[in-house]
Length: 318
Figure 1 (cartoon, rainbow, N blue to C red):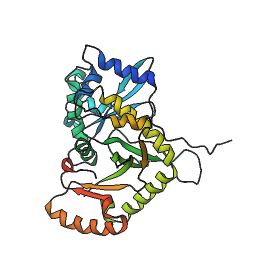
Figure 2: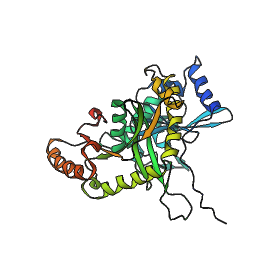
Figure 3: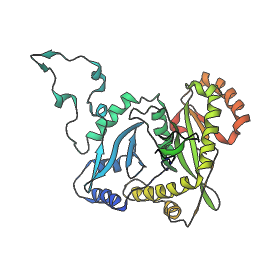
Figure 4: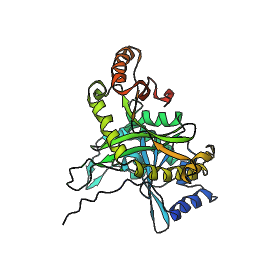
């Protein structure tokens, strides 16, 4: 007998797994996790007792926990030393492919070097013109971002109700999956509370921006956020605690005590149930057309829900 129970939206990490990361950060020897902590390009996102580390628009480490250890998983394509050569042909002679794996692939982790190579490979798959790279630039400009890839995923049952919020099924390519998902989750401070703000990121080149699809998409997100508001708030209190703990391990991050206060419920946390739209990557001639479109969208969505900038690295979410 099938059940209509759908999976919950969750963000958490077991205390013993957070302690594993803290120990990795504290050891005297260099390691992959310390490299990630020290790299300003790396953004850590809490999942369902898992941590995803993003850089340059790519998921560079999917960190899982097993037998008391943190195990990072990296997609094989990011381990190719020269991604452009991945399109080349390799000859087969006497039942042996004529290449040296050590010359073509990262075969072991070298502190201080391998993460740089992974990031360089990531740029091949997520170039500066891509949406995922644009989102990474926005993260760097907006330190109040606490999560990315907030997914609205259809459950596996046959329920006719709207899909529940769940963990992102985004592929490692940085491309959007078939499931609804919101790109950015931001903390916005008001006088007496913080609120969660959800942002849909769109390249100017995305044709959905110039059709009603974008309005339908944001309205659909809004309905789901309203439906699961309390689950979202609970999950993001955990995220605030996680980000506070991760920041305390990073040499270049300031200590935001408000994250701790939100996690401990001494500061109220609310939800803005109307997702906003961030548009980027366009030039001066395209700006005129975009301005007209933004004016039209503002009638439907309101001006406060739309921000845009040609250069994503200069886009401030507010």
